[in-house]
Amino acid sequence: MIVKLIEKTYALLWGDLFTISLGNSSIGISLMILLLVPAGIYFTIRTGFLPIRYFPQMIGTLKEKKESENSLSSLQTLIISTATRVGMGNLVGVVAAVSAGGAGAVFWMWLMALLGASTAYVEASLAQKYKDPDPLYGGYRGGPAYYIHEFFKEKTGKNRRRFLIPALFAISGLICWCGISQVISNSVSSAFQNAFHIPPIVTTVILVFLATVIVLQKNATIKLLDILVPIMAGSFFAITVFIILLNIRQLPAVFARIFSEAFGLRQAVSGGLGAVIMNGIKRGLFSNEAGSGSAPCAAAAAEGNDPSRTGLIQALGVLIDTIVICSCTAMIMLLVPEEITAGLSGMDLLQTAMYHHLGSAGVIFIAITLALFSFSTFIGILFYARSNIAYLLGDRWCWQTAYKVLALVMLFIGGLQQYTVVWDLGDVGIGLMTVFNILFLYPMSGEVLKLLEKYKK
Image (tube, rainbow, N blue to C red; front, side):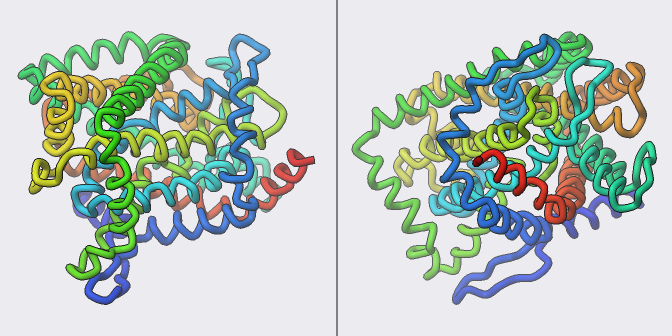
């Protein structure tokens, strides 16, 4: 019964509610598309095309320093949110999008990043405005559960310990992150088995041991991500630049292919235009997480008195995730002759592409990169969980530790066996988070626009 409920909820959130015909092709529209794409368009227009107009200010926020030891700087919150954004979606997700939708899917991922940046600005600004002091870890905490709580507090005039909708958001987040824990360990153990022939049990035990040492310490999470994220993202970017330089003459043809296939000049004839558009949109939304309510949990922890600055740096995080990191994966694949990757999909396609560029060293590099991306995602989501646990159960170490142990158990199980239902549960969790979050961003966005006007002045 529970399995059927999960499957039905998954179909409702992520399945096609209806289809739109486009000549020989069709586009399936899911509830997530209906929520996230119009929200991105709406907030982009209301903020005056913020990702373009305020890009210099986004870069400028990186220079801000924190004033107290226990709080986080804007750069540190960007690193935390990047740790969770830059994960399997940037490798496996992009590969899946290009495999199913062709090179044109990349263009639609770029477009979703520009729209998603505005949504990320709105939710992060609200999180920073309604943050609370964190008596356990020091600094601040917050997120959608907290700003939705303030919405109900103002509308009802009642000062309750918790309200139903923000509590449901918090529960959805905890469900989502447990499901993601299994996906992470399964992907890492599979990649290491393919690249190094290491048995999954060995990879899983080492992964869980390292995670345990880190997450059960009070503030080791931030210290690790401060080091790990810049190194892994920088290395991946550097390797991609090297590959592009090796194939610089092919670059104009790759961009021509992306733009021509984006509008179905080749796919429209075969009825594949819908696949191009929807795979790009879905993977772009899934990768940058804008609107899901995850990254605001990091944004709330930033020290500062101007929520707009925090919002801008989280908008920059969306652009880094998709425009930079996702594009790196796409370039690695698209700079390979089509006949070499024909018929391949998933990690087989990416590993074949890397082998073409760098030989066996490329296959090893991708396996290690996937492990680092995935591990940083696990550490990051446990940081997010802090706020939701506190909202639901109060400020007690026993509840914080209990959830960490649960996530570690899920990490161990996922490394040994793939449980599709649990993976679907993770998607259900992030889908429900998105529903609860987006519905309250609209009525609360007026506050953010006032903050933006104040920032402009």
